[in-house]
Image (cartoon, rainbow, N blue to C red; front, top):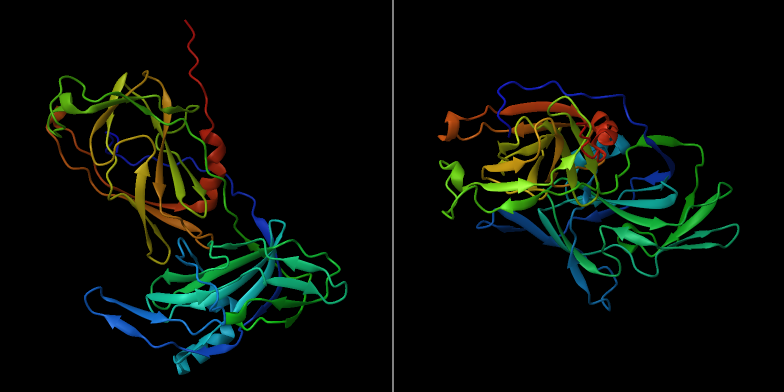
Length: 378
């Protein structure tokens, strides 16, 4: 990144408040036989076709994208540990019913028997909750990921537990008994459930996509029209219009998590009218389990090449890195930036960084990155 050799201390403030999740019910669920496993030696992966879902008339198919992984599955269902150790030929179809952010959510868990499973089916227009006292029907609103009324294929590491979600309207506090319909693969075709109203868990919630002023290209080359050459600063792009913020300690960070992506903003000081930068594609995030989240883009900026940012000395700007989505279960991440490749212009290079960051503190820092227009007093 910037021409710094020392890692700045991050300015991190108090913990963010967390949303409450009310848990109505949970169950290990029924056990189903593991589907036949096929191995592809060329692709170095395993696959399986799920059992018939009794929805053969539904012809639409899709591939489920950005499926949430439940990292705390064995904490939610500790009684299942022995069963999994003793017999791998059966798969538990576990589930939880909760209230989250004003909606009722049915979490359907699937422990991946292979790296790819096809012909899965989750929910359709038949999916609903029915209050056994009032007869009120709570019809399905949506699914996450979006697989509504479709058979689908999903890819994940074998042994990981997928968290497939079905959303309904909120249940009244007086609700005591319901039946769940239309989730056949989890054995819910009129399944009776007794509601627990006073069991709470603290969970995280998704952020909205942050809105930043995106830099724009001012010049394709600093001077001339020669192709980009790392060793010739005359060939570097000149950018302008970076997102301005109030003064911060250099490299303060903030984070936003959405179902589709993770947004990491980094606050930087502009020391010169034109200052050079580079963001390399091998920057990554790592969660507590060692899972890597790849860098997708730098909003409005080139990746893997040096460029100039034009502004004013004394500006404080925010650059936004977009990574793969981080699950809500993660509480900390490690930011890894490998050492920069040396280049001849001014004999510059920069060292790598490895920073362990608390996600909730990063979320609190979101307010520090509101747009703050430049104020010039003459």
